[in-house]
Image (tube, rainbow, N blue to C red):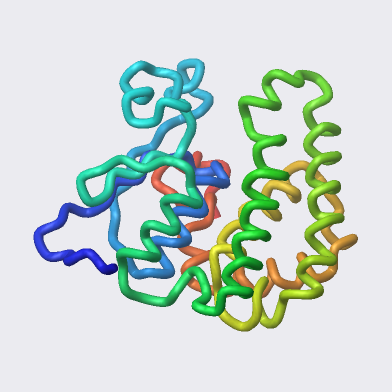
Length: 220
């Protein structure tokens, strides 16, 4: 089902430049050619703007992103991406083939549920002084599982030769791995896919280094 875009307001993405989940949504919008507005939510300033009562009305989990689209507010990046895919024209983000579609969801869930939440800001604040070692451990653990899965599914991209939601999840996670000094060279297929995807405009324009709320010292 595709929604008629005539007369609809542009989607609004409430996010943070370096948030993996916000970045996933930015990539999906870019791949689909969807214009949208951004409202920055600084996860650090003032103790975390996501913790305000005003933002809690948008996303009761007090996380980013929250996306206002088609008269509703959606959170959880994979739900947003799948809604965009189901309602907007443009390249498919989930394959038609049911096996490939399941593989895309498997990889996406492995990253979005099995790796990223264990090294997000809220968790690392609770861990304290050992946060870097904690993040490295769980990223390595996840990548050790992901690399052999990708050997079974990958072509040019994570699943075959078409960009999918799996690729949308992979790139921000490798960015986080590099932030936490994980040796990505241990995972040659992950590294190769990441390098290939970063050459694509949708991944470049959505990168944390060039967002409206990117600090000056982190801009490309």
